[in-house]
Image (cartoon, rainbow, N blue to C red):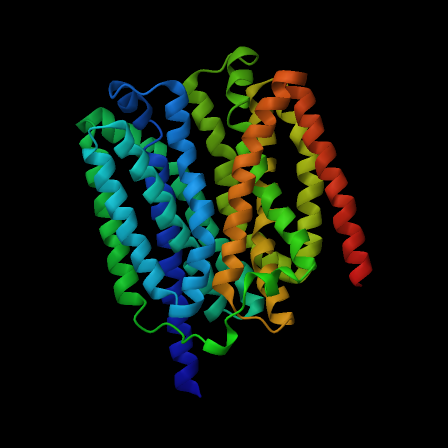
Length: 393
């Protein structure tokens, strides 16, 4: 008994390292191309609309590949999809580095989305496999910190390496990081838990869990809110607060840092407060805070508002992941790959809806009124969420 307990502890540590580094690597390489690819694509004759499609193609393939990755993960285990995801990431990185036509860049970006689907779905499912429910919040919070750190460092490292060594250097660096990630995935994941073949469950069975839809809504909101600011807030900061482009980049790092630092803490805290109650707090904070993004008078208070927003994202997303697994366990379902495929799908929808909605509404009503509309949507969802909880009690 003692041996199995020690072995389990080692497996948990290995799984946490592998998934956190995998998520970090994926988001680091995702972000590294942001300051590089637009200008390079223009030299290949791409229009602004085509460059927009280039960036959006990642979300499209992530959305399409995620359900397949979930089913594959439940059938063959977590290790194989994560290793396949790595090969896809390496291939995408090399293709980016040596692409001599715009459509090769499209193929590389789509391949990046497919590899992310495999890595995220299998990785989160692996954490659910090896961590008991009461420890999943903290474990998944740490994994989400890897996501935040990768998103934070990616554009900075990519831009610096591009200036220092030209177009190819960032992709050589990215390939080296992917190689380290690959060594971790192959060596540390040799002892993954076996899958119960009798527990393969269809999407239809999982979607019969009605409580699941409220959590899916939380995930969509948690992805939509930060992405809603991306196409709109920079113009406000530049035109109203007269902030430079470099400072705008640093300001966007504030909620990412706040999210990265607080996600593990809030994931642990949610076990004491209750996961649903923690998500309610996140909805309240986000709804109250969102309009202040354009109401503050100076840069200091803007930093404070963005930091509080980042914390609210942790309150929303850190408990949502273990709550998904709790609902599955409660219904006798252990098809975690399929479950986290649903998470990835919801997150992709949020990433798409956030900027699309905020951009369209800002054209019609202005940015400040748009943020009020978002707050109203959050308060309406808060009411629905609260009623659902009361009904279940």
